[in-house]
Image 1 (cartoon, rainbow, N blue to C red):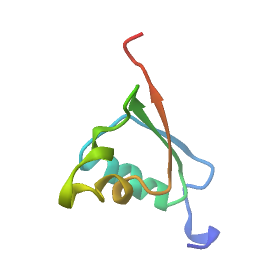
Image 2: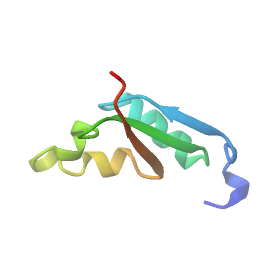
Image 3: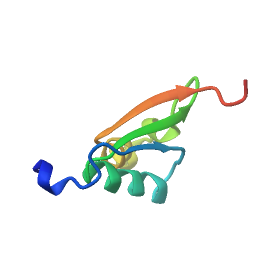
Image 4: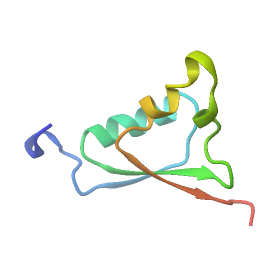
Amino acid sequence: MTSALRPLEGVRVVEFSHMVMGPTCGLILADLGADVVKVEPAPGGDKTRRLPGSGSGYFGTYNRNKRSIAVNLKS
């Protein structure tokens, strides 16, 4: 995608989500040029990273073009 087609270039989004709809929204924003930072629970990260079988590609598919950080939100 060229920079002319990235209308959200320079916008930063902090994503606190899991499963399908939240990551899909973040994915669309990232594809439009936003800097999406996915916040995952520490220490293990998003549980979808470890889905077995046919779910194994879920995390990579819905979280492409994002940066991520694991944070312990309980402390």
